[in-house]
Length: 317
Image (cartoon, rainbow, N blue to C red; front, side, top):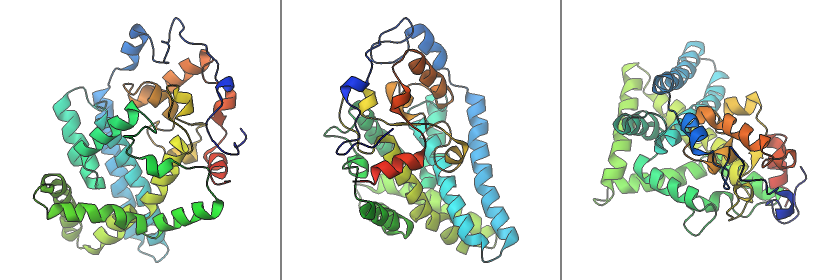
C-alpha cells in the first residue's frame, strides 16, 4: 500500500459499499444472532490470561536477577516495556467491560491488577476512551495529539521516539499524577495508583532488591513502554481522519508474531475490527475481521503489509 502525499485516509472510491449483508449491518457490526456468539466472555480463560501476564512480568524480573550481568539489565528494561503492554491491553479490555461478565470482578481486576500497576487511572481512562470510540478524531478525542498530523518528517519522528526512549515523555505523564496526589480534589484518583506502586516497591524490598523498583518498574514505564505505546497508537490511527466509515479512522496492519509479541498482544492488532464493534471481546476480533473481509468491506488494498511499512509511510512527510 503506497503512502499518500498529504493524508493517510483512504479515498472514498477505495472503500467498497457492500454493506449491509445477511451477516453484517450497515456499519459493519454483526447481526444480532452472530453478535450474540461473538460477544461471549470466557471468564475463566481470561482469568488465566491475567495470571499468565503477571507470570511473564515476574519471569523477566527473575531471569534478570538470576543472570545479573551488565548486559541483561538493558534487555530487561526493554522486555519490561512489553510487560506494560500486556497489562495495559488487558486493562483496556476491562475498560470495555469485556474481561469478565460480572461487573464487580471485571472492574476490580481492571483497576487493581492491571491499570493501577501501569499508572493508569482506570475510571478516567474508561471515560476518555469511550469518547475516543464515540468520535475518533472529533473535538473530544482525548488522544488526538498522539496521532494527528501524520505523515510527519522523519527527523521529527525520530525526535518523538527519542523523547520517549529517554524518559521525557514518561516524566510528562508522571508529573500530573504526582501533582494530583497533593490536591484534595484529585487525590481519589492518584492515591490508589500510588498505593499499588507502594505495594510493588514493598515486594521488591521484601526480596532484598528495592532498587529494582526503579530499574525494572519505573524506568521501563518511563522509557521503553512509551516507545511501544507511541508506535502502537500511530499504527492504529496515525494520520487518519474523522469519519463515519471506520476504514477512514483506523488502520489495519497484517499481523505477524514479532509485533504481536512486542507491541500488540491479545489481538489488539485487529484494531479496525475493534472500532467497528467495540463490544466484541479480544479473542473474537479476528473472527469479526474475517467476516468483514468475506463481505468485501475490508479489501487487500486497505491492509498494510507490516508495522514497519506503515511507520515508514507515517514518517515520510
